[in-house]
Image 1 (cartoon, rainbow, N blue to C red):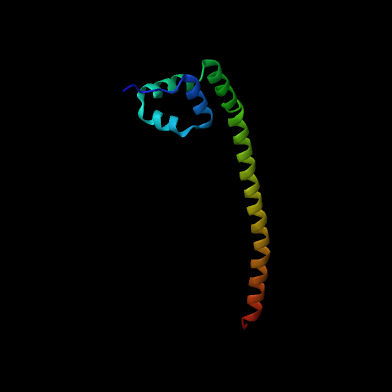
Image 2: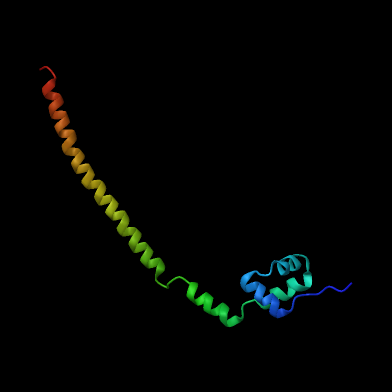
Amino acid sequence: MSIRHPSTRKLREWLDDGAPARIGRHVATCDRCTTVLERISTLNPAAKATLRAITQPAADLDARMRKEVGESIRSQETLGVVGDLFALGWHTANEWLRSEDEPA
């Protein structure tokens, strides 16, 4: 019994849209067609270089991140100081009112 393998064109079409399902079932059990799929789906060197170039982080990313994180930390510290100043007034008023309520 001879096994009919999908043509390379049919395998390419299956890679693009996953149809028909019978090709997917065949590929799941056929080493020959799996090898063909691996060969035709491998990116060429130019495509790999393009993808590598567009997915690399910016050269100054580290410096920019350090600057932004530093500014964020300073903002949080400033907010903490302002909060402490408001709390100081609250605690002062609280102590003053409590000392008035205590008998002398």
